[in-house]
Amino acid sequence: MMGNWWRVFGRERAAEPAAARPAAPNPELTVETLSSHATVPCDEIAERFFRFILNQPVSAGDTPNKVREQAILQRLRDQCESGRFDIRSLPRMPTVLPQLMRAMKNDKLSGAQLADLIKRDPVLVGEVMRVTGSVTYRTAHPIGSLQHAVVLLGQIGLRHVVTSYVMKPILMASAGMSGQIVGQRLWDHAERCAHAAVYLSKGQCDAFESYLLALVGYSGLGAAARLLDRELQNTELPASSPAFIDDCVQLAAQLTVQAGQHWELPPAVQEALVEHGQHGSAALMLPMSRVLHVAQRLAMYQLLSEQGLLDRDSGVGDDPIATFPPQLVARCRQDLRQSFDTVTPP
Image (cartoon, rainbow, N blue to C red; front, side, top):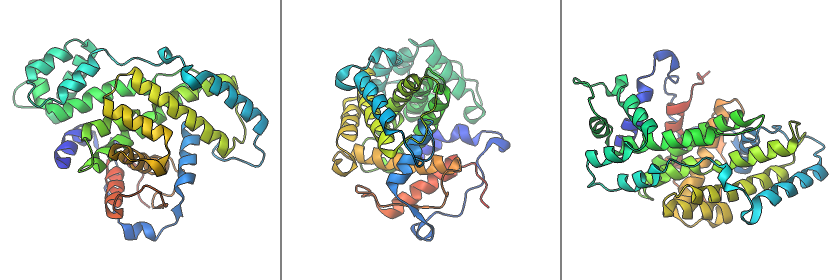
């Protein structure tokens, strides 16, 4: 199952020009390899990541302005808590998407039936035809219809095309001075997180729902960043404290739950978002929540190392729910590196 999934998902990457491809795979990343390098605590990694995503100073500095921070946080709470956030400010998912996601979980549905659903969204039609028209999918006979394209993609490939087509513009859609920067960073992390979630979901939970969950897991951060940008009124908040960053992330988690409801995501995905946002890592019980937590951490390591904000060979710090075997975590990190790492090893 895993091999088939990534053979489908990796096809377009394999078809990229040589200059755009990631560097050749590095020597295998193993538990022993990681143990020989410095280990960075998970909390520190998370803080670095959230500062990077929120476009905040990378260090707390010596003199955080705690009075100003508390004033800003209170205004953010006034806008976010108790359902006061205007959910209509978030982009809506295409109306066809909930029906299409339900349909794609039905193995008995024919290509013609899926094509009929996709036809309701002309932009999605164009995306499906674009992907199947790539060099990777080129066949002996031209693709003459949407139904032919759907069959060629298969359900797994179609799920990937649909969710990527929907989620990337949603995460990228933003307002304010730093919106485009935040949106791109969110998408970059979401791609890596979804990749890791599928890898880790085998034997744990539904792979497609894990993939979708990982794509939306930090969607509230975009909304929080926009609100923060508005509060700062085009000025920087110097030396923001770890507590300030943590409070912003907690507010973002509430917005993520509201977004999941707004987008009518599958019930299992919404349940995992609620648990992930409310209970903290030590209390996660749902397998899908645990997959999300570990996938997010591994995606943080990968993205930060690509940005030069973390030693790419640093070890994974202790985590209260990192119940996955160390060998599996190491293999997942290696898979992320081979798929996304563009840094040439020294």
